[in-house]
Length: 441
Image 1 (spheres, rainbow, N blue to C red):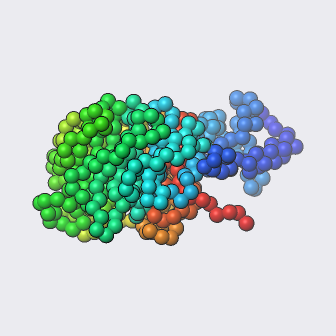
Image 2 (image 1 turned 180 degrees about the vertical axis):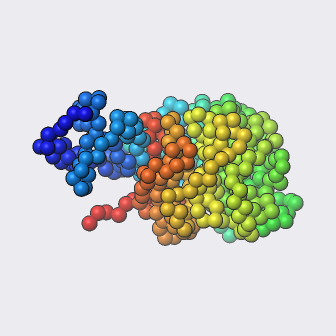
Image 3 (image 1 turned 45 degrees about the horizontal axis):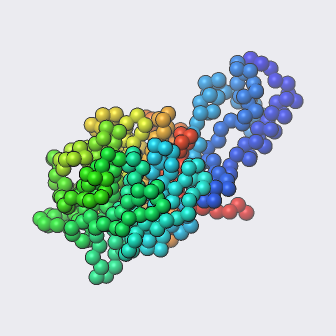
């Protein structure tokens, strides 16, 4: 081990403290700066010989000696950055495509808008309005425009008409063929009104599928339950087929009546739909799996909490795919949030990972993994409401669900919206939210 003179140690300690104090900045929507929630070692430590390890003074004045392996691990630790969504926007939804373009849709003043970024959210294009006519439902934290981007670059958006007395609400759809510069006139996808939970996915090979749930015959024998439905396009959204009730093996197809859903196309080309079940009034979660050309879905159960509830808790799941083909499903049960992960073959789910503090009134979770297997969980703590505020929080885990000890607060936002998360081109994590931290006194 290399000895470091006392005077040098003091200088190193002071320099470390000064450099670490400058590491936290704020990424604003204008791209002027960037907020880094996790901390990495200062660059000056790289000047040490390879056999030397990081030497830092602890609060007691004793030496903290980190191994070379620990130093290397810290150097590759992903950061957690906050991307500021447009002011007052509701329920931002994002996709990072294979070219590294970040696409975002959101609701604002009863309309839907689209923006894009080529620098992981550092700056965005001017907003383009999506809905050519009508109004967009954005109330209660989850409802809003939902986004899918095909491998061919086509941008697909689906939403539900704004709820109002006497208004019939349908599932609406549009697409952009010019990179989000303009959107086609909307199409009506659902044959019946009163739909909810709308979501969609597209594979870039012509298959575009939209899903929702709606009250239909036969009338469900449980409360707060509706039937899963779909429609599909085989020509990249130019036209859609008829509305179909979903056919499931070993499940009735009853969904929780007001919980949102999430559709994705997996790396295997199959279509996946995450939803909260209402079968027998048990409000647990499933992921459905099918070929994009078939209406025969296999349900994979995500959790077995057996939450017996005669009402809708109004918090649906989020579904993401990791680079290795596994999927992560984030969900809320009994007012606490968790995440589970599938095997690589998408034949089942394991783990039931909660937040570090396991607080009351946790809601609206999202979980995502990067190439190294690091997992970030983002959620809110606060009411499910159309007024008031809630706190956006995050925590990082290893691939086996063990907390790394890194956790933080993105800030406070309006209670009636949710945050979302993505892995950037740099393999770091980005939380997209309207939340702001309170100003330091």
